[in-house]
Amino acid sequence: MRAVVVGAGIGGLVAARALGRAGVEVVVLEAHTYPGGLAGSFLHRGHRLDAGATLLSGFAPEAPLGLVARALGMRFPVEPLPEGFPLMEVLLPRGRVVRPVGREREQEAQRDFFGPRVLPFWRWQAERAERLKALAPRLPWPPEGGELPQLLALLPELLPLLPDLFLKGVHRAPQDPHFLRFLDAQLLIASQTEAARTYALYAAMALDLPHLGPALVPGGVGRVAEALAEGLEVRYKARAERLLLKGGRAIGVEVAYGGRRRGEREVVEADLFVLNIPPEPLLGLSPRVPRDAWGAFAVHGVLPLPVPPPYYRQNALEKPFAFLSLRPEGEKTVFSLSLHTPLSLWEGLSREDYLAQKARWGRLALRLGEALLPGLGEAEFLLFATPLTYRRFAGRAWVGGYPQTHPFRFPRVRLLANVYRVGEGVFPGQSVPAAALSGLRAARLALESLGLGPEEM
Ligand SMILES: Cc1cc2nc3c(=O)[nH]c(=O)nc-3n(C[C@H](O)[C@H](O)[C@H](O)COP(=O)(O)OP(=O)(O)OC[C@H]3O[C@@H](n4cnc5c(N)ncnc54)[C@H](O)[C@@H]3O)c2cc1C
Image (cartoon, rainbow, N blue to C red; front, side, top):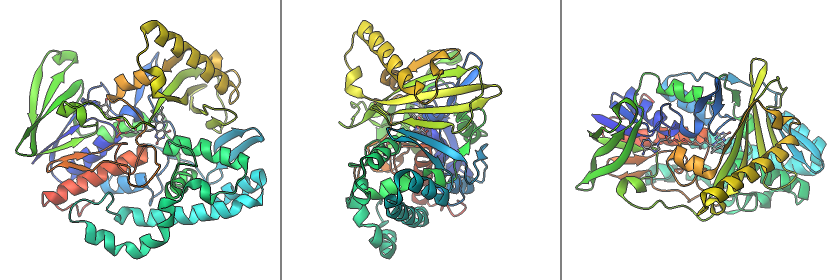
């Protein structure tokens, strides 16, 4: 039994390892020279910079990355953050609110900053997050053919959660403009849309980030993908260009190689295919981009001095909200600063206009970043990434998955009888833990369909 995984992003790598663990021969095809995709780290002037993701959470045993580690029988190279650690700081017109690790600590911080009227919201959030966490590993979602009985069996546990599938996050919150601004800023990075559009259950889970086992990754977030790639056959500089179909099944992937094999083409045949990229380009179709999808603008740099925690800081004083991530590297600090930017702003520009806009957004980002860390602009170097950079890098038109406006917004996991999709565009959405879970789910479905029960996972 042979599987081809297209893309060594988190979703693809988790699926590859899970399949490999069940005895399937797996080949991973990756267009770049290193694994991780939007959760990879690249080398620039001797520093490891994070291409996308910077803040990882979900390593607690019952949280997504904890479950994935257990299923794959591996440990991630991360340093868990202790209770009380000041994980994040959100800058609001009224001041700075810190989000510490641990629910009780967070509730105290929230009460001190916003007043006791926000406590019922946090109690609701904690209760919903706990229920969902308990349910998630057993929830066959999105349900594939034959999974209805499993779904129905979970109905008693699902019923109390149902209203929060249809209400929005904002409906559960006190109508305090400062608190709503805080929610908007925090949900935008997690659900890719503001509180008024995020469905309440997703909001509850997303806001749980500091309490799901956050961790630092020495050497950069890419270390997680590198650990996942260890022992796998990953062919780098291998760009999948076309999926070959026959009788409703895929039979091979046409690959164009770069690097030392530049100019070579090959059809890699397999019994099973896992796509960590949108399928449209592989099927000769135009990519479909949701109208409300966002692009990212990022600034990467290195400061010649250490910076104390919080290592994650968000500027919610004005829009676009800027998110600053800091990583200690000896006596220096590596940083990424990212903003949401409308994709439409970057379409159809001449080279000159594109460069001018890139410089303008760079200045805007640094101004917003300076409010979070004065002196940010005096970095040893500054690298700017625009939505076009991400498009080239990630191989897809938009990054960030579907904005989580309702719970039914994702494509089918099983695309064809032997083709599965994984990654942030697939349930349960954007983020490293979500992409990892999608990889595990696809691998389990594939193994079940092959009669290779995934009991050991
Ligand atoms: C600026 C930014 C900040 C973020 N911050 C965070 C954060 O702090 N925490 C968090 O959890 N998440 C964060 N995310 C989201 C997170 O990075 C992604 O959701 C996740 O990494 C996506 O994983 P994926 O499995 O979808 O794969 P991707 O990362 O999309 O990887 C796909 C892989 O496929 C490869 N590929 C593409 N086309 C081809 C082809 N034709 N042939 C072969 N290979 C191909 C690509 O090179 C890539 O390696 C952030 C994202 C961005 C953009």
